Image (cartoon, rainbow, N blue to C red; front, side, top):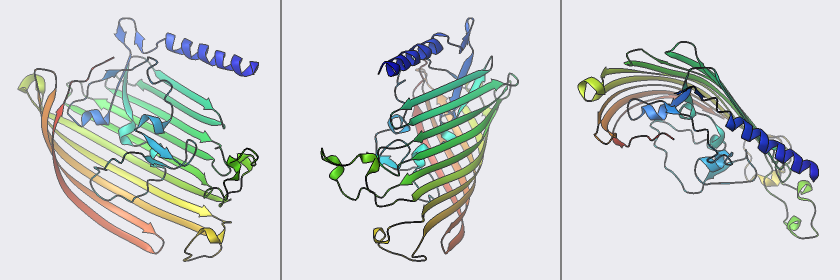
Length: 354
């Protein structure tokens, strides 16, 4: 007990020391600022100073940060939103959402502007060998060009047998803006490898009684089942401001996006209880289901945005999107194309800096 308290005290002092030495500011100026692709959705993105306070410092799980989720066990296993949110993505969706809460996508990446190299380390460890680790490094190569890398790892053993999760994400990103701020480019490469065991549930509930067996040795229905989700994506988006708000009174911007994404989803069980599966199609001894989905898409958009006196933006945008999908699952092997047009109007309040 004394060792645990000493370790906890050391961790608190270490974290306090890290935040006390705020490396995001140098002298009188702010050294590190960032923005995300979501900010560009409404017009020109403003670099925002990093928040180095303790606000939401305890919220380390992705299942707590992005809405309320209900899961089947520990961190890293399948989960879904408690209150459904309708997907507004245009085009084909493959329906593979088992582990998508742990994926890093284009919209999750921050692009930085730094006066000096910036590095961020984050490590959380908890019961049942639950660990979350992330590493970010970014620096400006030139005043207009910034590059960085990010590494994430999620691992947990679980409370019951066959609940181990092991997720890995690695990515690189680049951001460029011309001196006159008319042209901007952002690009990234992302690799996600998500793996989670599955036990099919408990055979009986005797472990919940006072005299029941230890839950770590409880009998489960699946003893060798696992889910996998692996994808690699390349993303490039560029913007050109035809008119600027400061000179013309409104922003006219055209943008072009190219995206390629290769997905592989799998479920394997080499020693399953045959009574657990209601239907057997191809093999009565092994369960091996895989889905492949390759996506190439390109999009062009025209955006008009008018800044208001209160600092907000009012605007309209129209876009055209083309997708090429290659989908393979079992005997299904299809290639199909999608062409879509969309428009939107928006009102964006002024972003407040901390």
